[in-house]
Length: 571
Image 1 (spheres, rainbow, N blue to C red):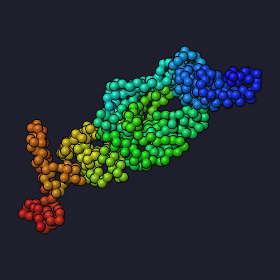
Image 2: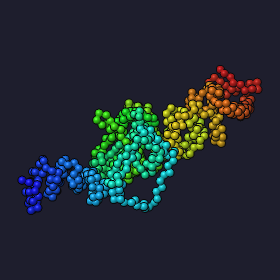
Image 3: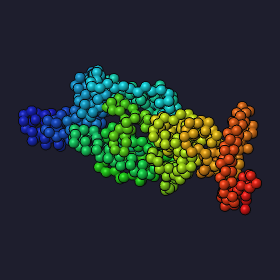
Image 4: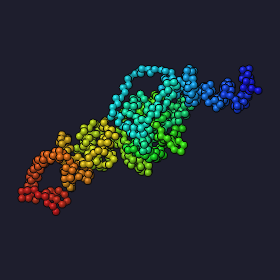
């Protein structure tokens, strides 16, 4: 007896109850053809049995994996039930078999529209981009210096990938290329013309970038695509958790960048001053994740995104570059501030972002505290405070930098050769120069590492800034200098200033430099002799009018006037 034929006849005569009993009993009997399971599925739909219909269509696909009618029927049913992710995959699969099916293309367009995938929607409907209305947008003019901070993404493996859209179905396709990403492609990525990914782990298994992702699972979002209130609530929860994590990272004194890739997906970026083994980066992110606020409401942290386990090993993953324009939804990724607003100057923010040193990573992983604070307004540590209090000229340069003014080459060099020598990691120098409009972390770090070991002398500062030196009390007297040449660093760390005689040799200087220094000292000698003569006249008149008076110079030294001359007496 053909139960399928009987059930169809019963349903045609209006005897739904008898037809339903046959369907529920015989629909999944083994040994049937794919076309028969398809007919059972159609009966289930007519009898308002969507779950049983889905079972029949899947059974048909088990018998014939690429049966187009079963794929199309299952796609339509998933769409009606609100499972847009499954409906999208099945409709794309059906269009591979029948690319000219207009009904399938219309359904896929509706799915893209409901999911907010405007890029894919434009491809499937072959819509042309409309001319934008309202205020005009002026794209950035990107030069080599603007692209320089992104070099850290190019230091991984010499390979990259690109996300493009299929012209037939609008589905995203990842194209792998065994070649390094060049600056021209990087520029196209930032301009939103193309969307590239890189492999940050180099051949020595080291990386200079890492990130923590904060997101809703994509399939979870697709299943609730029609619940707009649910989506809005989840997007706000994801954003709040991401901002809480960002603030927690700032409290740990870790430099980071929070990037909003979409309303449901955030990346918390970390950049390293030097390539580190990826296991150290993984350990660092895991230690940090344990300190972040616990995610709720189905939100997940993914603390490692550069590799994923495959079998007994792991496989590296492509990482899409920041600030890109996703072709699927045409959403531009943006760096966010701690209040959840886009950074006003995206490229400037990225250029100024400090990179973590390996010593800081090890300290953090071992439970220590980091004390690096960026953008701290006028709260310098003791050495810098003492230097500014002791040297009015350096203080004036620091105040100019902190006011966000552009510094000249000589002004920058003066700060490099004083503040830049106070600490090994350059923390104070970065702190001082950060507000300057042309501050670039990588550039400052590269210049700092090439600094000469000798600090700038007071002579050189007066030669560079004669007007400023004349308007300030720039007449320091250094006691216990031990024949070291005069320099502002004598106020705070004399050991950093070498004895002057050591630097006046051809071992330290070229003949031309030594000759210029010789002429400079001759001029300084005349100037100092005039100052000595003037001071001598004033002190002579003062002490001559006060016979027997002594001026205390230190605990064991006094200045007196005897036999018509000034004398220094030692006890």
